[in-house]
Image 1: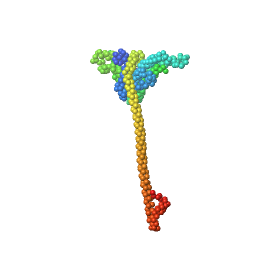
Image 2: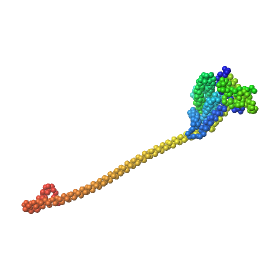
Image 3: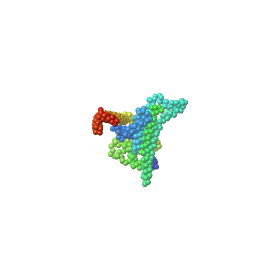
Image 4: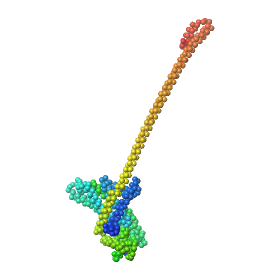
Length: 251
Length: 251
């Protein structure tokens, strides 16, 4: 066994691989996109199957879909106010897409599309453009007053305006990097400890016993990752709501 | 032929045991999705399938070849120590983001059109139903309170009526008994008066008889004692005596 064979490769799990044969390759359809489709399918299934009976007293599935609905609705109305109702489906789609991406990614053999900076940046850019367009549509030119708070002395403008501008423009960066870094770190850790299990397990008599330690660490990590999956989806949704609040109310 | 050998080597790598796989972790980790485009069952081992349909065989080989190219590119990238997420030269990266927008856009559209309105309807339905039930309960309570007040009223009225009729009856009875007592007293007074009159008459008669008896007795005694018969004197004496004894003379 070569020495390099024992090194730990935790990054290959993030590689994009085309699926669906020649057609998928022709249109650049990777397993990442397949998992996005799967997430959309699962979200649709959950919502449609849950609400199918339209029961007055909800069953388990209906309670789940209602719980998600009300959770995000409360989030949006709590942050944005009553005017935020219009944007509720957008925030809902965002939350569910991120949440299901995180959760599906925890299954063995599955791919975590939220571990790709391109994907999270795409989502964050969508949020950025949506909030900016909403703000421009609602307030027109007054929106630019956002970068210079009222009542501040005019001579401070050369300092305040660039600072506000940079903080506004860095929103999609922080939004996307937070999710991306969390998911990558979690999956790298899982992979590293899983590799430890296998490497230690091969060490003769003592191996299987020693392998129990990284195995138990991995069990704990999976639980932690489930928490992180929810938490990051929540953070993504609530930050979107906060940005929407700024867009609707301008401070 | 070398390409085919390369592909079959990859296939071998895929079919290795987990331990062996872990010892080769520097090689790109195969995912479940890769296996779907993996070798056909007849291609196990080093032997070239003899009976394979040539067209299909060529197609499979072609697929594996491109597969191998992607894997080779990924491996070279991994060898360079970069994260696959930052390999923006990979054409799959762009297409991933394009597909992300398509799929996420579809999810947003689905949420706006099909997934959320039924949930909103069900929740609204339930809210209305609960409000209606609460209203009905409130109405029923008000009704019960009104009925209770009415009952209390009628009880009070009935009690007052009863008291009045008791008082009236008592008064009537008292009046009646008073009248009867009066009549009785009147009759008794009359009887007493009659009796007194009778007694008076009887006494007068008795008094008259007394004087007569006394006169006769005195006359007889005087005649026996003195032999004198003086009726007038005797009568006068008796009269005097009677008057002296405070007995009213008869007549």
